[in-house]
Image 1: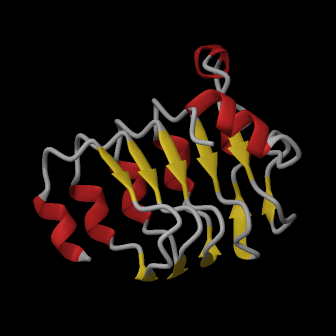
Image 2 (image 1 turned 135 degrees about the vertical axis):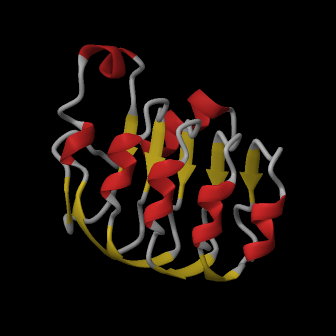
Length: 142
């Protein structure tokens, strides 16, 4: 809901595995302290808001296993602290995340993990094979 934008001190939004229905509000871009968004395994549809590229503190983004459509925002490429991005199991997403593969040495040293499952998104450094193992190990989620 758009009311989330009123939570200016919010640092982590974890709504995974709840069968939520709806869209991602563009007002997410108004949460300057947010470092993590995890809405994995819900029924979220529609496009990923371009405003995601304004969230410079984001480190982890998990939009996996939803019904997202449209182009993946190029704004992901503008997130200087991004460490993990999952768009897996959203078969109607298109576009390119190649900019995440062509980053400078500092960003590569952070071992960024980018996961997509379908070949509708152009990304030579993205993978899915070890997503569950890597994600569980790195973020102690499983």
